[in-house]
Amino acid sequence: MGGICKNVGGSHEIYSASLEALVSHSASDNSDIWRKLPPLNCTQSCSLSLGGSLLAVGGLGIKDKHPMSAIQQLDLESNTWVKVGQLPYAVYNCSCIMSSDKIFVVGGHDGRTSLKKLFYSEVQKLCH
Image 1 (tube, helix red, strand yellow):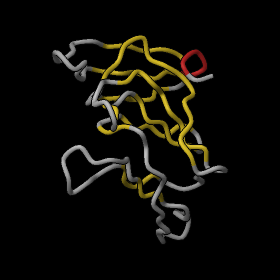
Image 2: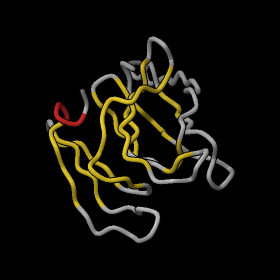
Image 3: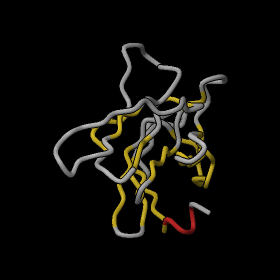
């Protein structure tokens, strides 16, 4: 990505069929170059910037409307989302944060109840 992630997500419809992201490629001269990213197979995932790529954590499956445990990464070369890891439980509408080499996942919903969980792990252990 090489620039700054300005805005991720958003839709005019509830339960949009894709994660749409706008990514700035040229922040060095304060000009923004935007592009639409490929559709993701879930909604309501948590998005994180990891180095030069984008991660989508958890989410609600587009087809079956079930919570997911997948961690997906945008492959910028093929312009596709690739599963790179998995959480120990399925969740959507959670919050995520990166700190140093760890991913923290907070709260969310498992399809039955709101979760009062905090999960964290080293990026290398979750994303292979």
